[in-house]
Length: 101
Image (cartoon, rainbow, N blue to C red):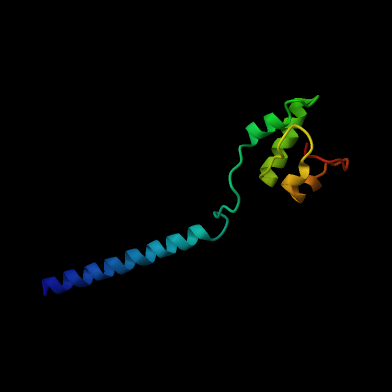
């Protein structure tokens, strides 16, 4: 009788643990916690991008905003904006000028 109780208890625990682990796995895959884009080193990439700019502090601040939103910084110090797609190229300031350097 004691062995039967122990077997039933172990079966219940195994079932319960498997259900909880399945539920946890499905929660991490769905929703806002899911990472679709890779992490980007915005600070380092923007410092490189704005190294030759006439106003490097302003350039770095704008580049940082664009990098955080678009998860991309074009290669080089000038041009190549189309590499990052429409998110980077279409972002504008309040004065309707291009925001991203």
